[in-house]
Image 1 (tube, rainbow, N blue to C red):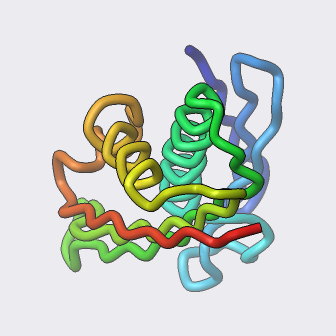
Image 2 (cartoon, one colour):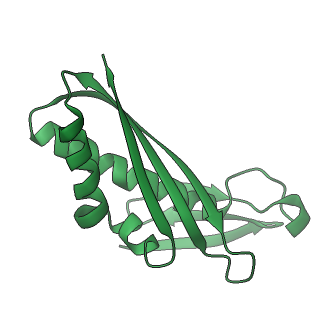
Image 3 (tube, rainbow, N blue to C red):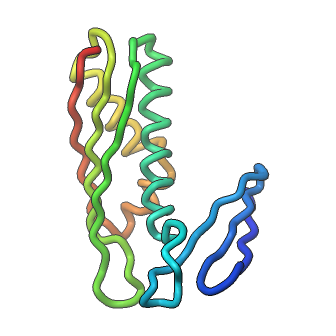
Length: 138
């Protein structure tokens, strides 16, 4: 995996991923940014949400469960002093589908958290991560 990040102007940066996609980042105005794009730490949190949601959908689909939606709402706290690492993250999953049993969704969330989601397992080295979920019938 590779990525190139280039300083654009002010405190904005453009990342080009190894798969050829572009992602913009910017800083807060009080740090010289113009608030035109997400902060790098926001992208780290978003990437973690994407990683774990990907796992959960894949696990449910492979189990032939009728999943039609998966949303993860993340709330994070950071250390007050540099480096301002994440110290606490809450991930709340809303999984929608037909006849989805809570035990099946709970198992998928647990498998992602403990085995498959590289991003959340890595962040778990500095942050206490809580996983909650709800199942919505479609």
